[in-house]
Every structure is written in C-alpha cells, then in structure tokens.
Image (tube, rainbow, N blue to C red):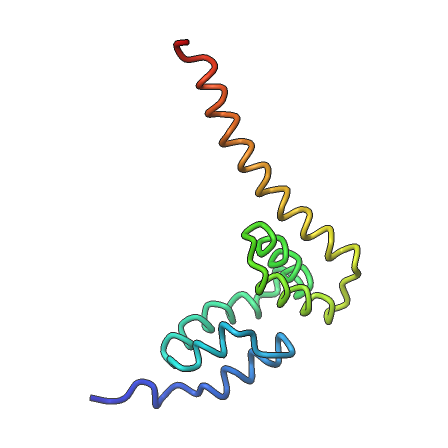
Length: 124
C-alpha cells in the first residue's frame, strides 16, 4: 500500500498559504499534521483564492463579514490583517464587520418575530 502522505507537498501548500495571507493561519498549521486533510481543505480554499470574479480585497471584506457574523475571533483577526495588507481603510474594515453582524441580527429578528407573530395569532 502506497503512503498517500508521501505524495503531498506540505511545504509547497504552506508556502502558498503564506504567500497569500502573509503568514500561516493556525488552522493550516494544525492541518499540516495531517497532509491529506491539509490538501483537501487547501484545494477548496485555493479555488476561491485564485477566482478573479471578486478582487482579493472584496473576498477579504466578505470573509470579515462572515467571521463577524459567526463570532469567529481568530478568523476575523486573520481577515482583518489580510485586508489591511491589501489596502483596506479602517472605515472599510468596520463597515464589513457592521454589515456581517447586521445580517446575523436580521436573521435572529426574522426568526423570532415569525414565532412571535404565530404565537400572537394562535389561540389565546
């Protein structure tokens, strides 16, 4: 049985990650201990990183909003740093956070108000 880990160039993957982010985020550091998992996760991320439908900075704004919405401090810090390296202003970074968290608030309100409305219109 051939060792599939032998065919995975972890150093090359880590180098690409460092080249994009300017550092290696913790998730990739830990995944490097399991080369097949690292490669699988990186392949998916790389497809989005090289897709030119959105600029790299726009991708970072989307990532900032999502990280803020999910309450993921580590991801938020990572994408704030990368966006700043890509030239984002402090105002743009804050707006990306506000937009992401507003979606979270809107989702909670939408779900809660539907339950409330159903409750109020049901038998008393």
